[in-house]
Length: 435
Ligand SMILES: [Zn+2]
Image 1: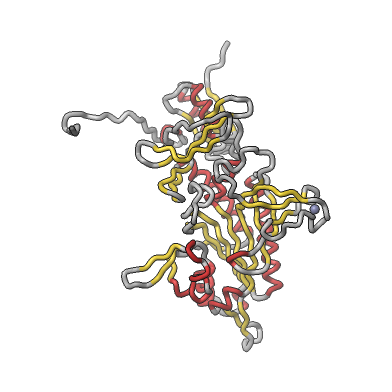
Image 2: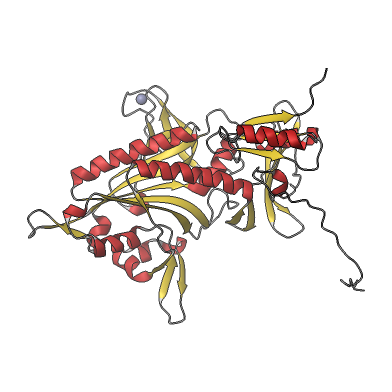
């Protein structure tokens, strides 16, 4: 028998209170309730596939810490919709936007202009560079109603080189640096829970154009220095490793990695056993991807290097003329009878990957521990009912820190636990003093 519910019979009253005003309030933020996960024998068991009532999956995790205390970590950043595809929730988006802000500042220091390239790309350019075939099944391909072939861009060398080939004609217009922060697509064979290797992800890509190889090398060094500053600003320890250039081509490349170092459950949230391996010299900090070199001897100082699990969060590539020659991006020199192919570089930072990598690395037994640079909010102001006091504190702090009031209808103890789980760098408790 089917139960029939008539909407005419019942009136449902909304109970949630929304508050307008200057102050940021957690009561106004959409934060879904977490789903408890499974814990077994003191081992870390990441549990991504908890079905919520709406049929979406919330990435959440529970583990038993070294002290044996059972702790619940809520991953309220991302909701997986289907394998390798996810929505970013308000808390995750705040982290993402803070990373984007750091990227924008870094790109400004390189005098790079921001643009936004289309995500749909015609097969024509990809066939010219040979990557329509070479990319294989990882390329998301589609056909329009006129049977023309397109792809959803996994990267933008083809499109940007074509743009430059049409607009930049003289060495007087170089150097040029262009970047975007945009969505990219990759038909991963085995998308890992959508967190580390999503099929749709956000990246910052920077493309550099120079008139000569010597100038391109200077640009490369400037980009490396800027990336170094960027990862320093974020504040999570990293290594720079010499790398293979892989599918993208070119002859000079470096990767920026977060290392496993002292975290035993490292990578548990992101991936199980699928991350990169790098060899690191503890004496001089030289690092190299094991795809490039498997020799345990440091190329710089001769010491023994050690293999570590790592997550690649950025890369820099010198491309040379691979794309400019294939797509006809040439400039005239001072002597206008001489035309030469533009020297290019492409450089990337995995923005959505950084959100989850930082969350995974920066956590303790009670929850996440966001670095101040990217925390959803730097300070949470917790109230035990003294609403007015919290607003005054927020007003006092607003010029110094990015803060939010936890004014939800919960006990002080609940809010403090929640603040620890979310991992705000600073918690301010507003209450009456005794005596
Ligand atoms: Zn060394």
